[in-house]
Length: 149
Image 1 (cartoon, rainbow, N blue to C red):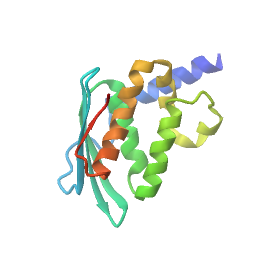
Image 2: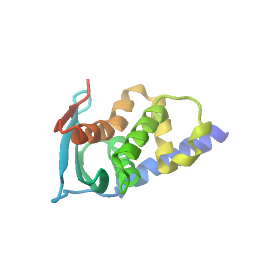
Image 3: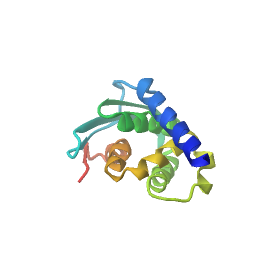
Image 4: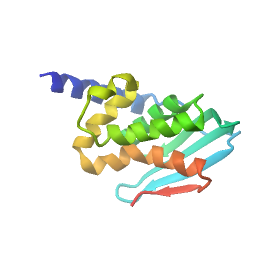
């Protein structure tokens, strides 16, 4: 029964971020931008960042994508805003674990990001949740484009 309750909570968090995404839109003062594309499902995501002295001062995204991708992008922008690039890299690694690890014990401190754990039950959708994060990494690396294979 506990798993059903968690699944419902995770679904409601994802739906809420999809319905009312945080930090959605274009960022005119972006120092880093990249476009992401998932050819399997057609999701498109653009991440804009303003990085000053290794600190993410502003982050926004634009997307034409599924609910999981948009929710993940919304959660990502909330998690990374105001963080150093080193801290942001740790968040990226945490999300990789959230999307692949069966052990929920360590997830309590991950806020809304924990809801992405339910996505791992649908392997085809893991790329949907990871697209914004790969696009962020492409932007920071000045690659301008992330295409998931």
